[in-house]
Amino acid sequence: MKKEVVWWNRLGKPQYGGEIVLWSDRNIVNFDPYYEAFYTQIMWTWMEGLAKEDWTKDPSVFDYKKFLRPNKYRKGQLAESWEFTDPTTFVVHLRKGIYWQDIPPVNGREFTADDVAYHFHRLYGLDNFLSPSPDHTSDDVLKSLMSVTAVDKYTVVFKWRINDSEYIMQSLFAPNPAMVFEAREAVEKWGDLSDWHHAIGTGPFILTDFVSGSSATLIKNHNYWGYDERYPQNKLPYVDTIRLLIIPDKTEALEAMRKGKIDLISPVSLKDAQSMQRTNPEILRIPIPFRPTVSLDPRLDKAPFNDIRVRKAMQMAIDLPAISKDYYHSKVEPNSFAMHFITSSRDMKEWGFPYEEWPQDLKDEYAYNPSASKKLLADAGYPNGFRTNIVADTAGDIDLLQIIKSYFAQVGIDMEIRPMDSVSWHNFVMIGHKHDQMAQRSELPQGHLFQPIRKLHEFHIGHATHRMISDPVCDTFYPKAFAATSLDEVVKIYRDANEYIARQHFSISLLQPPFYALCQPWLKGFNAQFGSIQMHAVLSFYLGRFWIDQKLKEKIFPS
Image (cartoon, rainbow, N blue to C red; front, side, top):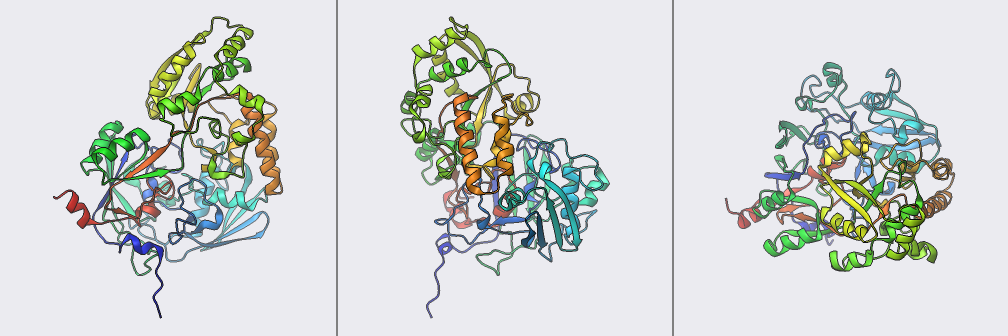
């Protein structure tokens, strides 16, 4: 009988040993899923969630490059199976034989249903916890999850206020940073896990060293429970060490990659990817679909931005086709197909309100028209324009902002650019709401969200965002979608919300630039899967399965 040839054979046979070197542009400040710290955390290298990706799924069928993972493409990780016993009761059966890392005070005991219940009780203020985590008070789950009960050692029952099965599974299984599990004994001993020395999980790696602002080092967990689904006889993980280098300057990081000192950098711009191709053609350049949608976000509770005429004028002052042609070298669509960040990207064609469906009057409001822009400003009481400022995340595109600044100047708007590093930006804008005019950073397009309904929450008055939106029509979309009883109904509500938001110009929309992942040729298994190096809850899943072709590495960079 002819032996079946599987698709992963072309990747070569996995090898043990070596290290993977990752890069972060910001310091690590959080080691506890109870807190939220704007992606400045790496707990997912030693902690795990209930579900994982299907490592045997052919990428031609589903490649996991998008944040959205339909539930049919999930497998159990800490969970072995699950089912609904009624529309609001979700039962999870845990995998037996999973053990915590052999570190005091847990000392390698078995992971059980009590650990799952404890995590959700602590996070959302259930059972004996009087209040939820202050960083998760706006989570959708908090409003819909009633109780979590360990009914026996390996069975957990979730009771919900809603009967949307897709939403429930997405809430628990999506690569949400909070959906990994901490050790109860560690929290009870130390109060929380803010100190990196208290890092304990069930994952394939153990944190052994952390130097703030410099690096983190993790070593193989030799007692890890997992095996490679492609090679079931192979115990995981393959590599001995994970190192994370903290280098705020991306130029410096790219130079380190050129010298073989970093294995993966993602995302990078088209310009950086082309530069790397010229100097190091051996480095793989992988297109990634999560193209951040860039926008300028005014505070809608302050003049002049509380006047829609001003927002329309600012949009019409920008020549998007010219930016596409001259700045992005025609590599970006010049229209508004997905430029407003709530409008769905190409990755979710059945959702949203794509540009080709827009009526002409709406297209005109997003077209370059400086004369109409000046008239709108005059009608709004600003015949000579006005002065403003924008607080910009330096991880974004400051050069692009300079181009926008010049367009605004042509209609009398004098915009000062105030750059700020990513962590400071997040604390200043997203948490403190201390910006007094506008803010700018890249947003993931809708095609990468756990579930489209969640994005509507950002436009609901009960959800504080840096745009400070307070709109009675917007307030109706989220509860309607949340209460919908069919997928078709949700799609209709979401489409209507997209059109309304596009017409209100809550943000000044730009374009979706292309991005790439750069990967050393000796690192095997990486295919720009979302979350595989971006510090999400599936991080340990991927790092445990990636491996190093050490002969190839030695050939390219002899020791």
